[in-house]
Image (cartoon, rainbow, N blue to C red; front, top):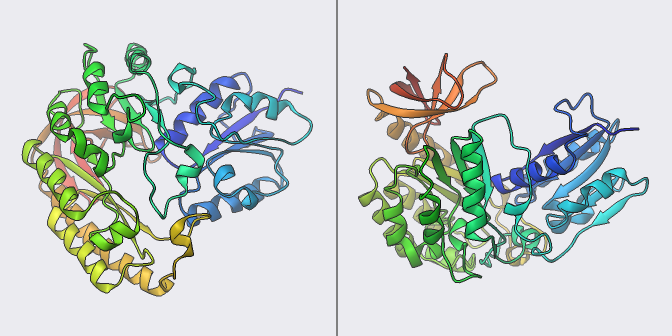
Length: 417
């Protein structure tokens, strides 16, 4: 009997790229309807405890009437959390074995430690989604040693893919009609640490492609950006580049940053942010903050709060600290949950206030906008040159159009042609 397979993906853009590789490998069996599927591949994330709980419950629910195979980061982060009833498991380095797992009558488990066994993922074919955005993975793995992070267990150390292959994938995607390129990795700023190259040298080559497209750079850690930030600022002036900088600070307190093993301090982070804000007009600044890290006392939290007031980011990915298996911080004395929730609530209010003020300042301005997707309610999302989302009506995906901003919410703009 021919299988009908549905893929359900959780987590980051890197993980979504892995799902596109799996879809190609199983292309003759893939269905877009979970109701039609007899098998569901759950491509998992394990970065947060809350996410893990959600996925574990989802797997248990699916097992009531579906055959379930688990892929992604969770098998290498917390294998014992996965229900014994699943029909197979593959890790992030074993995508090529998915056919064997799907076709096997017995439960197969492949969890390789070597994140180089597949070679460069840019050389693997993909089935991309129906939008105008193409995910391009530039590397895998992490050069950090953050005491709270378990994703490094799943993705390994930095493995940078060849510049020539990345440029070819971007060129092919643009030739195929994709107008938005999403460069992604666990940490894009760590690109080339294992090869003697860096992100700036990669972007220079990508921008030699003489066609119209927008490029969004994925998360880049401040300690690695620091080594080539002047070159990177100049590259942000290229017309292909979204003026979007995702640079996670995690805490505004130097002692907490040290306890987190982040590899940067507040002063260094502020210097980089100031450099980009000074040189890049309408910079869309995104940062990540963890509240409730075990050594975050009230003064440390206030330092974080004050830092956010100072840098005024357009967006904050705000996370309540959660213990993850085998991490250094999981062995520390934990802060009571009610305190973590209260700090999160306070910072969330500030986040919304700042984001709304910034977005409101765009009302009355006009921008060239790339229409990137259709929303569930029938509206469309477009992206202005700094990647800020704008809600539109009666437009076509993939078109570059002129848009006037007529209103704003704290998470998006509202525009009209």
